[in-house]
Length: 329
Image (spheres, rainbow, N blue to C red):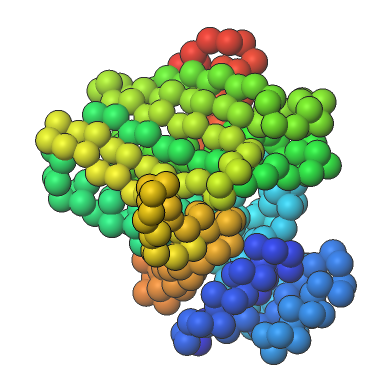
């Protein structure tokens, strides 16, 4: 059985611990958190030990480690885990800088350790089915992709200040999804954005409403739109247009019951937020990580995927700053 350590016992750490509890081939051995009460509570829930982060990294009884700490800690933790020979499951983004993320990639590859970048949306059952249909040629050659991602409400301004900005914090999932579906890296990025939801976000130097256009060398186009506000719930949709038709993945609703009357048809609201919307995806991605380690195959998404998405996020940030497209090497 694979022995797992967890760094970070906050909201996403709790999600990963819950996923591990459903996988028979792995166990959560030890957890660490800067807030002792958070670590104690999660450890008790999953029959794990509380250790400090350095002890987990150096432990001989732990095979792999989940990094669910704030992004600012990832760089040092990745380098330490690589040096210790541990397999790594890392939350996005790898770092707030693509250059530093690339340094992490070099350290991981030099150490020869397995690394999984946690782009959970690739594992959403509906998005994964869309990808499979696309790969099977259901709509011919891909020409245009439209990705919509809107949160029900913005995070606090205190979070925005240390998030790295909307493109690195929120849109990075969509940038990865665009690469995943395009199967070709974009060579041009153009971003625009505004602060329309919360003036405190603007005061923190960020935008809360943004759109990005990506273009590949062959001419494929991806359009991504993000908002920190959606009054109707968590809005997650993908549409792929091809030479022979279209594939579309709609929102997940709280239920599938519709009511009809003189006012027309009404349906249930969208699922409210990412924890419930992507519950199945979180379990599927952790299962994929554990399977890759136990079968000694390369984890996917890899650290290279994490770095590539970060480069797109950096390019979008620069494009917004200069008000012009940014070319990528």
